[in-house]
Length: 232
Image 1 (cartoon, rainbow, N blue to C red):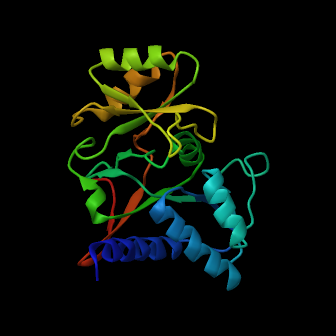
Image 2: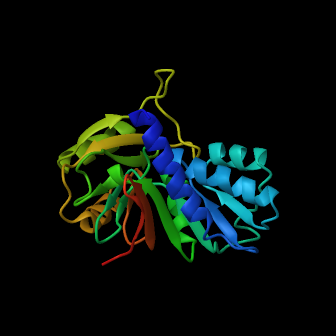
Image 3: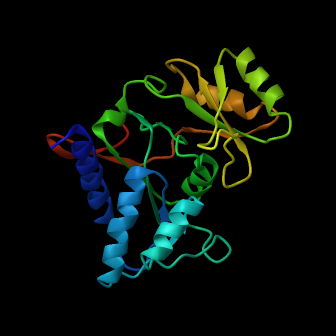
């Protein structure tokens, strides 16, 4: 098995374990990204087998996938509270389960869904576990298009290395919410909660990919099997 095939299989195992948590009648938050997509795929199979749930997607891509699999979707207008959200992460901090999310481009909608959920479960392979956030990935920050250069300058004044994200067409990447994404390096974060609060004070910042105290459990698949992590 190639390394890529192994990673895919580990993601699938994590996704299947998360699908085991879904019960009839639940309102389910459907995450975005490669591992979350495998969860949605597994959920679609269970819906075809008779599972009765409704979902709220975190992105247009997830919405399209869910509809193609026969998963019924609803909105916050009729279902303001979500029973359980299953989503991936780009980094999961050991002990706290604080996260970096948003490399898939859906951080704002993902955070809205997470904030509306009674419970959030993260699915990932064991490469995503870190001792401190910022060890391996950049921090995505969603910003309004107007004056984004000024917003980027202010982030730089905080010590970040800032790069605007571009799509495959070479143009600035636009999120489902019509905003832009700045990928920022703050280095290893010793106090991500404090950083999140500082970022909220910058005019032009919509939200960041820091998910602090959002996840209740992480289902992590590795070569030795699937493990469940909770906050210590």
